[in-house]
Amino acid sequence: MTADSRSGRPRASSREVLAEAACELFLEKGYDATSIADIAQRAGVSRSSFFNYFGSKGDVLWAGFDERLAAFERRLAADRADDATGEAADDVHAATTAIGADFAPDSLALALVNSAAMGLGEELEREASVRRSRISRVVAERLRRGGMDRLRSDVAGSAVGGAVLAALEAWARSGAGTTELAPLLRDALDAASAPFRVRASVRQLRVVVQAPDFDEALAFYRDVVGLPQAEAYEAAGGARVAILDAGRATLELANPAQVAFIDAVETDGGASDRIRIALEVDDTAAALARLAAAGAVVEAAPRTTPWRSVNARLRAPADLQLTVFQELDPS
Image (tube, rainbow, N blue to C red; front, top):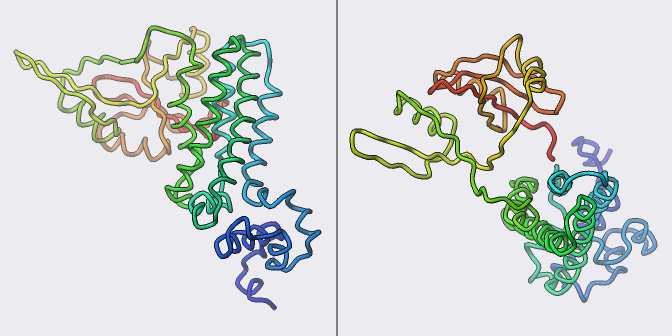
């Protein structure tokens, strides 16, 4: 019985063994001085076995990412062509963030952090440029099918390609084993998305709420819900206002039939206010317990919706009706 079988740890695949051997040699000898034969010998396999898993020495680093990239290309190539620019942009956003779903640290993350020690600077930049171009091309094509003109779609594609590679490097350098790639991809897309957003004069959505018990409401939304205070002002006569940062803002418009459908899904006979605030959270059950403990009244317990989220509803200070929701899919 081997040590691996005694400990219950699954034996590493030949692909993993080859990748580990390659990274060891890159650190010891440098990328250029390491041959495929060296990698195969260190891994204890034949040179021909190497090519069962990788097409080249560089593929050892990029194989895991390339699998995600191929799925990204297939997804955007298969999306419908008879939609609007906004829907195409949503497709791009969803497909891009899906690249990072459960992406485990691998040889690429190690190489990005140790590029100088491995002598990989030029090699990584050259191969990153190839992947950046692939992403740019498929994104631009998808946006053009959604009705965007060629100039803006090409600019948008370049922005998304750059965002993905920048997020990948940030993920590796921030500690790939302790940081998720998907949130970094969302942040990078937000920074890069301006070129392909539908043109609009509105720059921010702000919900203004009259709060008779100002201190109670401020403590609840800032300290319990967790909305950071961005600005605060006072004026004559005891006038006070606080502006809290709620992250990305969207305006959801729903007709009465849709509202009735949402109410049927989210509640047991409850009804939506004409204006209801929805907050995305990491864990609906935990958020609901925290808000209820701070004084919010639960109107509907957490439940899974047909649109793949876990939603719960509360009545919160300042008489706001809240839905807290947790997205179940990484996209």
